[in-house]
Length: 403
Figure 1 (tube, rainbow, N blue to C red):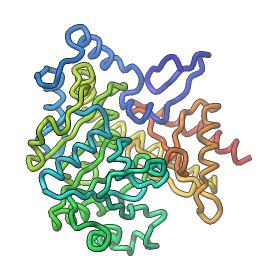
Figure 2: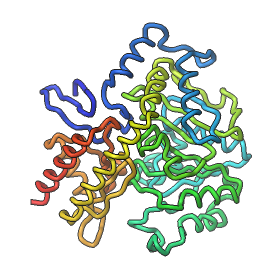
Figure 3: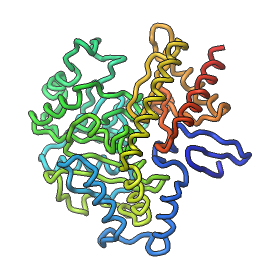
């Protein structure tokens, strides 16, 4: 690959591909967005990096904008991290310090990062298998995966058992020292599982009842991906912390952060501060990204294009038996592929992603190729015409494989 522009990625032979993965789900404004490029150009002429001991204008602007756009209880921002894994790990440290407890509850299929702590706490055994020593103190509980409910329930009658039964895990599977629950409002790598109505408010109530810190991992869902600045706002919940990254850099600038309530503030810098955190160049990109994404018409377009793709995909579902489920919010969309009897069609999913390149589509699958969900998450600058083009190409791809 040699060049990117907007939603397109170009290879050395001049072929163009619509990037339905937005890089690694981090190009919220697509490739080489002019405003991001200009912000980086101007900042690079003045100051690329300095130690985070000092205040610099782009970092201060990014912090202010994050607080302005976040749920009202989140008034502190920690940017001294280099990526989403470090942001999630830092939020866990803050919860442990604030509560005096050590354990963390995460969900089946969750993916919270690649550091050893976050690998240990994530919900896939295949990611942990090669490592002889893992971080202790995490408890995985069933995720709210209505299409494949762990408890064999139906959403209309389940009474959200997936939240209520966490009490049993605390009683019988934990060490009685749970500091935090960390959850993706919509799972990123785990199959685009969307929390059903009522789940996250009930989880908020559960955490309040047990004095547990609730952390939303919004590394993928944040910065406009759901048609709101944060998925927390879509679901009407105020967590104690939100972690952000990926799309915050607009066109790929490396930046991440932790938004917290006052309760979690005050972790000394020597406990969680990284060399390239709060980088001035990346913060300049983030500040202009936040200004663009926060525009009401921008977020409205994310909702409109997402709804349009969902409608088109549900039409494809009626025509192709291999599509078992279509789910998503905004431009955070997943297509679950199944075999007869709804068994996961993992090989088919991988084949579709591989053949997608021939149809000019960059597609990613769930669980690092171990899953059966195609992820449709193009840059948020997508137009309705481009949304139709994606769906037309998906239709041709499915038709080719079906025949």
